[in-house]
Image (cartoon, rainbow, N blue to C red; front, side, top):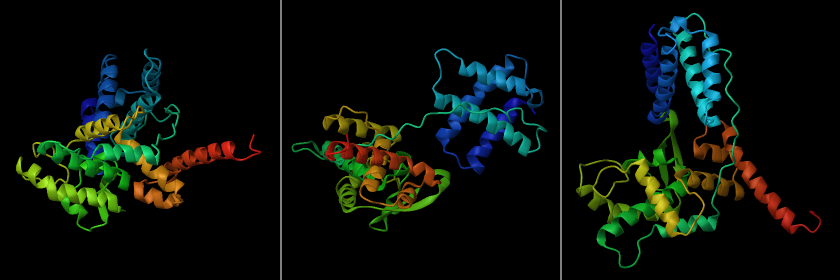
Length: 307
C-alpha cells in the first residue's frame, strides 16, 4: 500500500475508533508527514519497502537533530511511527512490523506545578467585576469568574470545560463532563463555583447569547460564539497578571492545584483519580509526591531534631 494511503487509514482509525482528540490526531498527522517526507527522499513510497534499518535511521537522525528536540516531542514522534506500523500489521496490510524494536526515549516526569490556596483565591478574585466597569466588561468578567471557579472546583481539562453545554449543569451541584475517548464522568461542583455560574447564567449569558447564533455551549465569547480554548487561556493569563503572580499560570495549573489541594486535605488518591478522569491511578499518584514534598519541608523546618 502507498504510504500516503496507509497514513490516512491510520489517522482515521485513531480518530474514529480510538476516539483520540483532534489535537492529538493533528500532532500524529504532522509527525507522520515528516516521516513520509524522509522516506520519500530515499525513494520509499510503499509500506512493503520500509525496513527496520530505515526506521532506526529515521529515529536516530531525528534524535541527533540540531537544535535537539524535546524528549516529549521525540517520544511522540516515535510513538506515531510505531502506532502506524502496528496498525498495518494488525489490519493485514503488512506481514512484519519494521518498528517493532524501536524504543522511545525515556522522558522525565516533572512534578505538576500547583498554586497555593491563597494564590488561587487571588486569581479568582482578579476575574471578578470591578466597580465602575462598563456593561460589556461586567458581562465578560462574570463569565470569566464562572470559568475560573469551575476549572478549580472540578479539576476538569480546559477542553472539557469548553465543550460543556448549559444542560450539563442541569443536576444542580454536579457537573457532567465528557473526557478523553468521549468517556463521561460526574464531578461535584462546590457552592462558590455554583454561585459564580448562576450569576453568569442569569446576568451575562442571555445578553451574550443574543449577539450570535443560538448555541447550547455554556461559555460564550463577547460576540455570542462558543468560547475557544485560546480564549480561556487569555482569561487565565489576564487574571494571573492582575493578581500579581509572576509564575506561569495555565489551565492545567488549575487542574494540578485541584488535585494537590484535595490530597493535602486528606482525599483518597482513588477518589481524586475518579474526579480527574485518569484511566490509571499511577497517573494520579504523581500528585502524592507533591504533597510529600510539602510535608517534608514542614517537617524539616518545624521538628527540633529534623536536622
